[in-house]
Image (cartoon, rainbow, N blue to C red; front, side, top):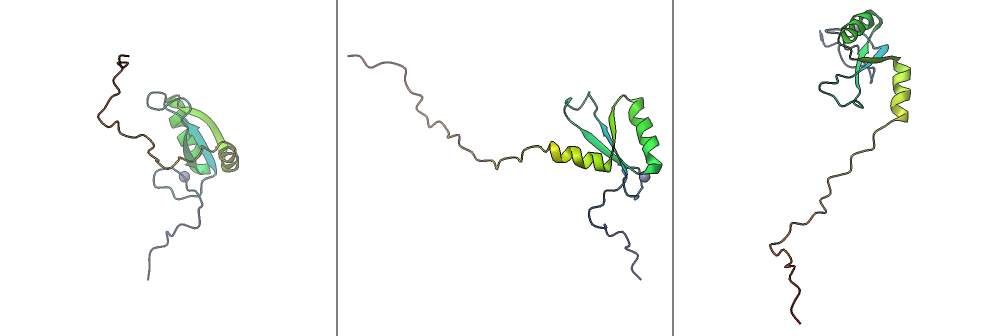
Amino acid sequence: MPDADDAAPGDVPVCSGKGCRAPAVWALVWNNPKVHTPERRKVWLACDDHRAHLVTFLEARSFLREVLTMEELRASESTSQPPPEPASESTSQPASGSVAAEHPSAP
Ligand SMILES: [Zn+2]
């Protein structure tokens, strides 16, 4: 009998709680000013059971920014999507040896 019953059902996000596989209901947006730039947003997902625990953890460190529902998180992500990174297209050409001499030629 296969015991692999953990095939991810579609793209259902799962709680960030340790060892928790419950579907996430909440999105805790946080930021650690010591390691993240202010605009950086980290998101922990939480089920109902773990929301309070994770909020307490983040609040104790003053990391918590906001608590959203998954719906609100999706809405906020769809409105503020970062632009896709352009393919690294190197247009810079290596300077080939001769740095132009700035001496005007004598008349
Ligand atoms: Zn959980």
